[in-house]
Amino acid sequence: MTVDQRVSDWLESGVAALSGFVPPGRGATQAREWAAEIERRSTAWGHPVRVDGAQLLAERAAFTGARANGGISVGGACRLMLCADGWGVAVSLSRRSDFMAVDALIEETPREHWESVRQWAATRTGEEIIERARLLGMAIGYLGEGAPPLRLPEDCAPGTRPPSLVIDFSALWAGPLCASLLGLAGARVVKVETADRRDGARAGNQLFYELLHRGGDCLTVDPSSDADRARLSALVRSADVVIEASRPRALASWGLSAEEAAADGVAWLSITGYGRANGDRVGFGDDVAVAAGLAAHRGGRYEFVGDAIADPLTGLAGAVAVMRALDAGGGQLIDLSMCSVAHSTLDGTSATELPPGEPPWPPRTRLPDGP
Image (cartoon, rainbow, N blue to C red; front, side, top):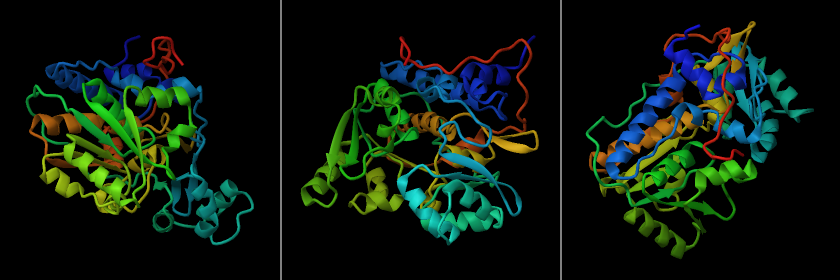
């Protein structure tokens, strides 16, 4: 049986094996197109980066062995729930602070966190839930709320000079994947953390974390120290690329300005859940994908697509955006919304059953010997 390219790319990505269905949209195909552009530009820089973009979408699951569980995310930290105006909301409780905030969210002491949130959400509209989550800094997405169009820097001819220094303030998956791809393309990558707020991915699968950060350096700083603030400022001034994935005010409080850095020639990639204009709203890969509409409707309910799929899609899109900015001369502030990235992959197709005779590939890793 012959399947079209969109379906074939999903089957080969590993995402279909995670979910048990062909996801909606053309995310796996788009991931391969972005990977092809990364290869083309990095080849012109003299450091070819050859990755299968579709494979990257399920790569973390190749290490963890986790699989989809309907309305519970692959990682287990996000759940889909009904709200008063129907399906639905995706609620992430992935940090200790999220569980501590549940009593403020539902305005009572929870008996059991997930069940208490489920009961509370059923009595509130999606809009009410999102507004309260925003105030509390919690990551909750309202199914299909949509997103503004994705706007990457304009396409241009490949340049010939790779970036020499990338400063990576990001954490988890999207930003580090982008930094990793730039590192493979010839850049020196320096990851910046604070001692009291390390990358939460360190607590996850160690092999996957090391894959995303191999070959890079790590710098631990104290933003309350005048000496460290001066050191950070000097680092940013010497960088070709800065990657951040925090609320915009976070680095501003350290005395760093994205706008000033971009004006000085730095390609500054700002990754947020919903755009810098909504920078006070928190979002992670699973709940943001649901907000974008990248979810599957099966058997009268909605299910997650893949594993935090907005993260690897954004990592690939971010690398393309930075490469285009550098090839155009640098000096751009790139406002990259994970929700817009995920929404851009939708094409009107719906989730479908796996085609007979076309078994999906399992999640794979780039490591030659596997996890």
